[in-house]
Length: 153
Ligand code: UDP
Image 1 (cartoon, rainbow, N blue to C red):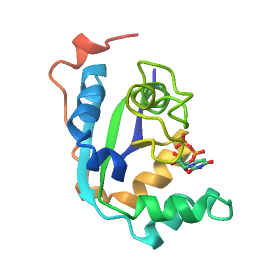
Image 2: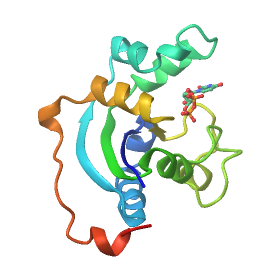
Image 3: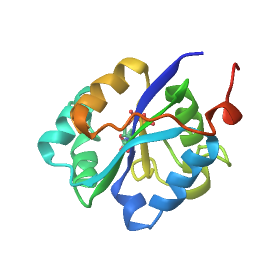
């Protein structure tokens, strides 16, 4: 199965609620690899780039206010089918509808403040990784326990 990369953000509410470690642990416990990680403030310009598909939607102004309101933690997560695996770990957009056991389902009760972003496709991931990271910020490395987490399938 294909190894993929996906762009993950711990959003401002996740940072403020001190859920960075919890979210990183969920990702690591699943066996996925974090190959880049940094904290940054999302500017209005960066928000418009990231959420280009939503800029014209009625909820966008509130979304921009939210995503620029406190720092985020950006990560690149790599592993077998990492895009869809992370989307399953994250859960539905609206925390009130997200299944228990997912990050949003366990910690969220808002549609906007849903703690975490994960790319929705391999193409989106490539675009979003390019927005948040330069090539020299990415640390691709061999994971010693990799064969014990996911070998052939
Ligand atoms: N969002 C919102 N109101 C809506 C839909 C989405 O505030 O009605 C926010 C929410 O923070 C969401 C982000 O916009 O995570 C991007 O929306 P998308 O539909 O892409 O959801 P996601 O892929 O994050 O589940």
